[in-house]
Image (cartoon, rainbow, N blue to C red; front, side):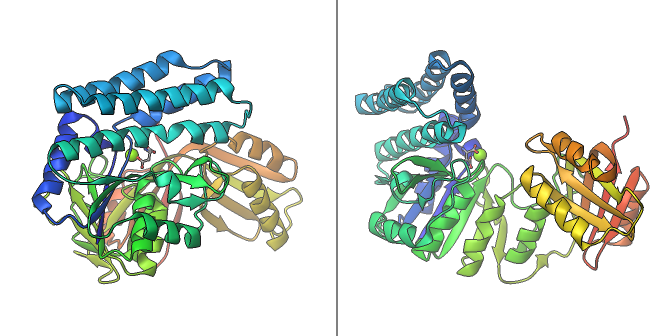
Length: 419
Ligand code: ASP
Ligand code: MG
C-alpha cells in the first residue's frame, strides 16, 4: 500500500484536478490512500472569513459565498453539469459552517479557526472523490476528522498515535483507493482540529506510519527537492537522493519543500518518501530514505529573511553565565519566539530569532529590564550545507555579514539586507 499527497497547487482548479486524476489512472494500481489539501488558496480565504467573524462577531456571509462559488464553479467545469448530489454536499457544508458560527458562544480564536478551516479540505476531497468516480476510478471518501485522533491544541493539534493507528486500520481498506483530507484531525471531544499550516504532508506521514505503507509520494509543482530555492539561487539542481536526517536538517534550516514534522514518522519505520512533479510524473524526482546522505554531493543553500539579531550582555559586564542563558530561554518560550542561531562569548550572548507572531518587541522590552540589549531587525540567515570554498566566497563577497558560524558540514551567516 502506498500513500500519495497532493497539495493545494496540484488541485488548484478543474484542469489541475483532471491532471491529478490522469496520474492516478496511469499508475493503475489502486491500493492507495490519497491525502489532499484544500484547493489553491482556499485555506487563506477561509482564514480571512474567520478573522472577519472574530473581529466583527457577525457571520462572514460574503466571504463564505465567494468560497462556495469557487468550488461550485470548479465542479461545473469538471462535470459540465455537476451532479445534484455534489452540489447538495457543497451547500450542506456551508450550511453547517453558518449554523456553527451563528450559534457559537466560545470566542477562543484557535477553537473557531479549527471548526471552520477544515472545510477547505472537506470541499476539495468531496469534489475530487466524485470526479474520480465519474472517471470510473472507484474510490472511498474518508473523513480524516474521525481518523486522525488528536488532543485539543487547536491549530497545532498533537496526534494520539495509539488511537489514530486503531482508527486508520479500521477505516482504510488496503486493497482499494481511499481519498481523505490532509491537515485536519478530530479531538476526543468530537471537535475538528488542525495540524498546523501546510500540515498535509504530515497527515500523509501519519497515515503511512499507521498503515506501514510501502512508500509515500508527495506530488508537487516542482521537480523534486532542490539544493536551493531556484527563485533565489542560481544554477540549482534537483537532488536525486537524500537521507531522512539530511532532509530534517535542511527543513530545520528553512528549506520549505516539506513540512518539518513529516520526516520523523517515516524515518521511524524507514518508509521511503518520493517528491515528484505532478507536471512531469515520468521524472524520478527526489527519493528520501535511510540511504546516502546526499546524492549528488553538492552544496545546499537555504535563506530565511526578516529575522532579528539580538545581542545581550549583563548590565555590569559580568560574565554571561548559564543562569542568564536559562532566563533568556524561558523568555523566548514565554513570547513564542523561535531561535534560529545562537552564539556566545564571555560577556555577550547573540541570538538570531524569527518574529513569526510579532512578539519580538515585547521580548526586547522585557530583556531591556535586565540586560544591555542591541538588535538589528530585518536581517537574513544564509545557511550552506556541504559547503566548499567557492560557495563561501559567493556569499561573503556580496553580503554585509554581521555574524558567522561554521561547523564541519554547515556554515551560516547573519546578514544585514542593504537598503
Ligand atoms: N491547506 C492547508 C494549508 O494551506 C494545509 C496544506 O496545504 O498542507 O496550510
Ligand atoms: Mg498547501
